[in-house]
Image (cartoon, rainbow, N blue to C red; front, side, top):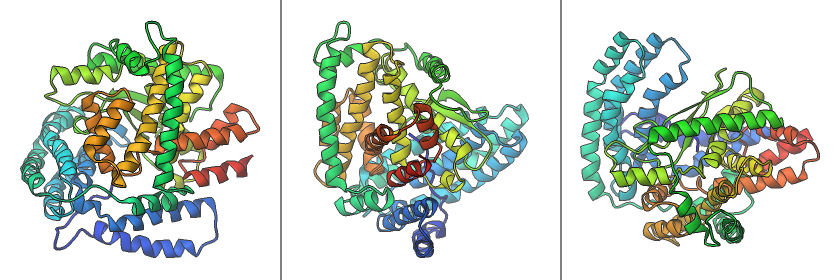
Length: 506
């Protein structure tokens, strides 16, 4: 997955934050201006993005979800140290300024959330992130600073922000009991986002059907392949469960094995000349930030900062949150078993997210660094897994089965995300569906369904985009490396625009 950081809010419920309250009105004004311009890929990209913003005006996340406030605050404090675009003293000055703003931002969170709109499930999800804030501010954030004197300045400046997080944690604990809102978006808005923002030519019901069809086809493939895994059988779920017994012994060992797999994937691409690498690109393999661990159960990726020369990305390994039980730790390690490491590393790094985003940063127009579609970005990463399988990267049937398991998991997401938001499943049914249709632990399915409730339309982007990219590749007349460099270098365009960009270059 990739990071998406909303605007930093300020203000109160009675005087709503201008960047949030006025954003949709201003987006409508900009939309009218751009719609009057001649058609072109970049113009159409901006139009699709603005249409998405205006559509979401009827679904004000800043009144519904505490993550709108918590995510930007926490990420905004950590990311300067991950990217390190300036000397450390300047980074510290900037972070201290941001720490001073945290109490006002979190006060806005408490003021702006509407108990009639906010869903208890999403409030409790945000509560976990808020509760992780004080430890992050006291321990993890200062640890990012190398100079002891500067580190002390950051630690000293965090006190009021810690208090604000503690107050917000207490508030959300009570607010979750009072909240009565619903996270279901409804089929109309969901379908409009697919057609107007993502530029698909179908809506939620067709997306659901495609997911179900893909799951059925993959199930048949996996039954055949699982029987070829040593000790396996045609029951691919039990075969995957057995493979998950072989996993790294600790989260630190898991990170080290992911790092080795990342290096192997890059070397494979270079040896086979499957892609061109961006100048100076590099991917660090690091533990997921402490504040992300309570709400994110799977691996993720942080791209290089937009509109800079940096090509440094970060592969976040899904560590368990502080205070996790032995059982929770074991389940996290099992869902990152050695059979699964190759496909996850490929997805997040080479030639998945890191390669594609670092290459696009070097080759695509600047506007495409600002406006991006998850349906291309996640579709590309899943396409990368299948392409690497074709090229012989997965060296035994267990690796291949784990790759198909990752793919069938994305098919199940298509079914569940649409069904949840169109009212055809409740959260408990969604958790049961994911547990029975993919090889996920119960704890992971809970975190997954929380994510779908909070982030409608994103979960289907993986397989939807992948299938379209595979169709484009089948039509490409030239070498494979040329296809990769051309399509991935065009940026993370909505799929209809990606098709046009590729046609224009062939």
